[in-house]
Image (cartoon, rainbow, N blue to C red; front, side, top):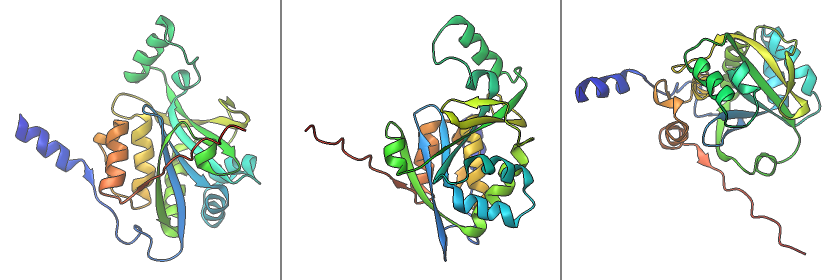
Length: 227
């Protein structure tokens, strides 16, 4: 059994693509933000839009048009019903979570939120890792994102009001295809070393990005002193 588990872990380990990562030339700084349960990818709007403009990625271009003029977008994916449900622990929400884990809630959704300013300040409650992607890696990431979004027309407002929205995705959420797996897949497309199996656990995802991918844990700024 131990040998079988070890073999499974080795077989699902994805290695860095040396042609893409680490960046040998001009790079794009991105952040992986994690709250201990869910992870998001934070990318400069300008760099993401530039890559989408040079590629056949109409859905990504349509999504980014809503966030033009902002500094960053935060990208996340998950089960639409659970994602948009109340942040409470009750029997109804627990039932939605169980159905989501079993893949019975239907298609998922991509959540996109835009903001301006230092990500460390805007996302100060999150654990963050900084990575430097190559521009070619960002282009590959855009194409993976394009394959996830099925329509650039938003389903509903996001969790951060007008600056965010949920977009439809044809991918189905389930226990072996979690939000953190999706984040790892985007990074894998960009050439970053990730683990297809362990990425579902937030601590494993962050640890792998630091240990094998050379990501830098970002220290959150100290709170401003009281006047």
